[in-house]
Length: 459
Image (tube, rainbow, N blue to C red; front, side, top):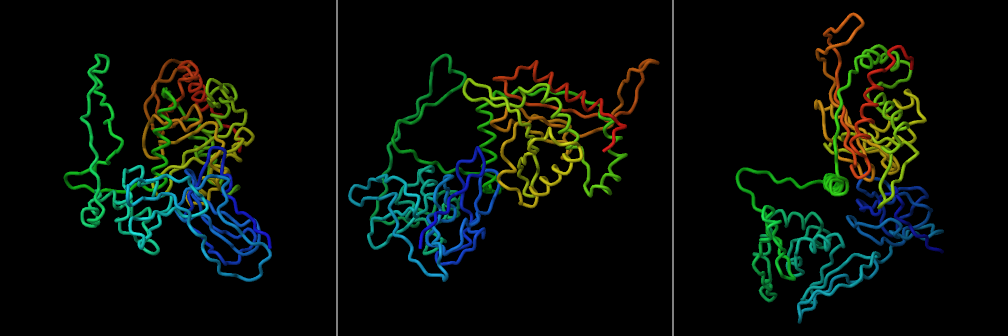
């Protein structure tokens, strides 16, 4: 009976790895074709991985919380089996080996098919660690001796991600009570930190790295009445993307004021009839996206990306819309080929993606391929914002809250003051390829589209 490999699926053009959240099957279980085998998470969405064939699950090659590259074999299924069989787990392959005599940590190439173990100095006490736990330990400067003495709550007392993060959050104080006396911990010699005295750097006070091969993580202490909250996985990824975007693109933000009175009055007039006819509520978002798409056709440079010294102009206008989740995090589902949809089609697509995002039903493809992003900061009461570019795009537009204000109007009979519905719009753009002139021109074009909205149009 042949074995079929279950592959970590490709989840989007920019996604290179995924984290295994949960296995729904164990070795020996019968599996139907298209039945969910495991749940995975990427930096954008959580997703289910179905079986590509029917059979019996032969082998799991990764554990929960392991980070797996796209295209890697994650399990094997025996095709043609009619009854479940219990299979022994494969023998683990060492990833980190601590030698008792020399106390030297030797690096062995990563073996993705098994859980990464660590062999302690006591040959009768073998502990196993997942690649994720070992990676965290290496990043935080936790030695093998220290890692071996962290209490584990996982199966057979294994140290889980939660255990090592709780240990770090507690200031790594557990070690002082649990280290074995027979395993002395070497104290690294740290040379004094030298402050650069170069005249050009006098105001920056940049310190050089300590000249030592061992980096020791200094526990962070907090004073006063504080509460320490661990970031969830999505918040960590959002934070990383925001920092990376600022490091990648020199951000410039332009602003414009927009009179949207005609638009507001039109929506109030048609929203009930539209909902009764289409079963959908029409919000401002599809109207704003329609205006953005029209202007992107006039100024295609705003729908592009940068590849080294090349500018890649995207002819497919895929508009991302930032959507708030119940957890407080943000996700950006993408309206593919938005220029091919009329206002009714945009409304239905916007509502469908927003509902899927809030209920956790977005598919990986729903968040990829965006060429320009739109965010409505006015939803939360802000009148304007300076959004951060969603890489690898080069621009993002924000709209603020619509407010009634007295404005001076020019009429054939002379100037007058009237109450108008006003809104600020802003756009952050990549100054590597978009200058202030082009950025301001595009922003004003969107503003004019909204101000000149046809209040007599039908939908």
